[in-house]
Image (cartoon, rainbow, N blue to C red; front, side):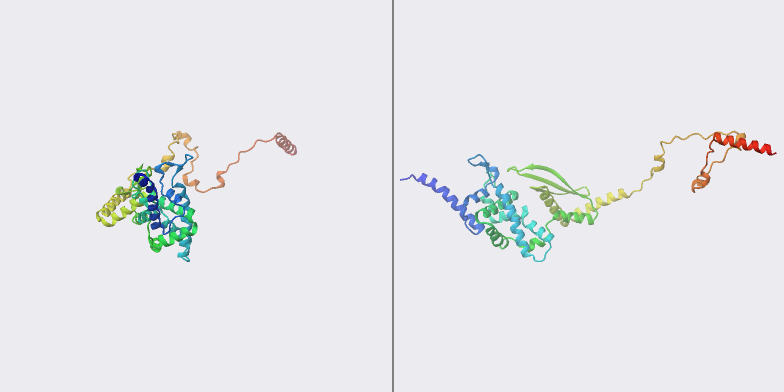
Length: 339
């Protein structure tokens, strides 16, 4: 008869696998055929697990595959749902549905973070890790059951129960664009400043960005990409502008000070002509004696050169040739003979 402790150790893996089957069924609406695909989809690289050949085993490859499948499936759904809409609208809607933020929220809503295996850290707060796991799960479904199963999963479990596709399509979520539009319309200066870049406990990069409006400190945002941190900083700054009238007053007061300084006239403006002629050496005027005064030809005034005339052209007499001199001498001699 087997020892009770040994029986418990044998039952434990089967119990855990049974729990995983049940959890995946609650998420997907069907049981896996090959559970190994799903185990790998839920394995974060921080675990540093390796196979028999020494190669790392994690969900990164399934994440790559799931990303491509999601683009195709969601593109198909959006195309059929919004009949007659143009390409730009369809692309924008698909981008919202498969964005890192959306996938991270979906994973959290479904309870997926509780199943992710990472290096001893709770992944529930990490939308970057959760979104990657969601993509890897789609990749596992594709390998386990095919494209049609992925389509049913997105239509029946995601879009039918967790996402209102029409609200997503028509809702403006680009807070950075909204803040830029507001600043341009009000002619206020705004910039994003990256404060720091570090890594979290799972070695994922974390960016911190702050908004500055007319030199005043706006809100700070963090995210797992520069874009995500800028979006968060923009969203919080927009909320602050709406809720704090004194902040708006300070912004426009700073703008007034800046524009006042820019509009003050400059008292002394440099002469560009003078600046360009500094290299010219001015000569002293020619001294002329009273006797020579009458012989000096008057120099033309500046206005005399305003119009081009033939008087400005002179022809230098050329020297006579030997033949011309002999011919003139003979002519002169002939004339004397006739006299």
